[in-house]
Image (tube, rainbow, N blue to C red):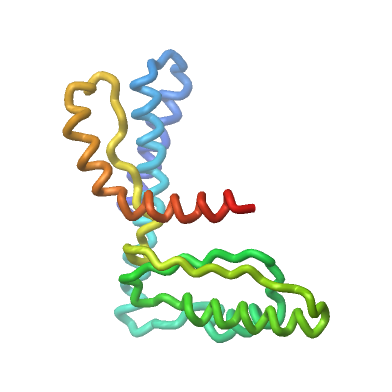
Length: 175
């Protein structure tokens, strides 16, 4: 579609810039943001098909949530698990996932009685697409004069994403 054509054109421009080789730091930053944009456009290109499927009544996932929970109960063996749940997520399955992991722990204890799973569920603000939010506020050295305006807007825009990052980094640092 149109988005695919835009991605192709953007890829051509990025390739030409990359071949030129002689670009400054500001140009490299712009190229990185354009690469991010190209990747985002690939995602956006999937949205019309998704909306069309939902409009036609498709509401199921493959594998089904029940199939996923059954596989989790049978095969899940991770000793540490972080489940990130968003407050405004209408399709959230965090409680069911946690229950399935607890059932997997019980199955595992039949084989190895001393096994204990460390499961943490963190509930944070945001919704199902929060982790996809991009930092669209690049630091451009030539625009340092507007840095004071950029920083508070960027901080507010990315507050939830930064919250997800903090939860993940804190959990990872506990190992």
